[in-house]
Image 1 (cartoon, rainbow, N blue to C red):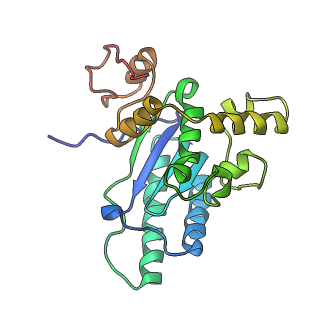
Image 2 (cartoon, rainbow, N blue to C red):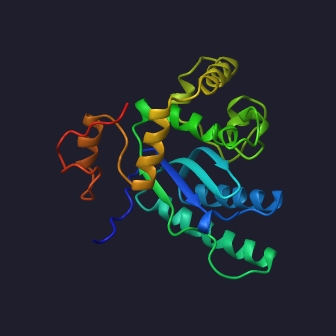
Length: 230
């Protein structure tokens, strides 16, 4: 069966996962991680992709991004991926592939899943046992949203601004949201939808999204209601 093209639609947030080949480490130093972030800053601006959240784990990365054009996100990921592999291979005196095939991504419904996806991303280092608190991990966007540092890559989504009328109120509300965590069903839904490339949202969202693209957005037939798992 032919592989479906990625589901990529301008103006919608996308959850992106890029893994190392065979789950191998994709970073050997802090300089590697900073180089990847610098590439994301460069190409996100050039290709009009808003990055709302990210985390750089040892063997994979997560992004939450909204592209302004139909090809902005894939072009960004391709450019960043190629330049980073050249950098990493030269630094490690190696050759060959680094990534586990093409990146995985899907469109998510903002009102239902965007803040949950941000918390999911921020909590990756905690789930992996790398830190006790997400703010202790230096390679994610979490500290930016707590007001602990300014991250030039990050462009907050409108839903974040709605968390409060002042920076302090928004930071406190977001910190509490992450402390509360996300339930296992939400976590599984975010992972499964992204890896499989199916849209994540309520039935009306999925049906309306299908009208925007010829590519199937769910396992059900186009236009039929799709039930989410939470």
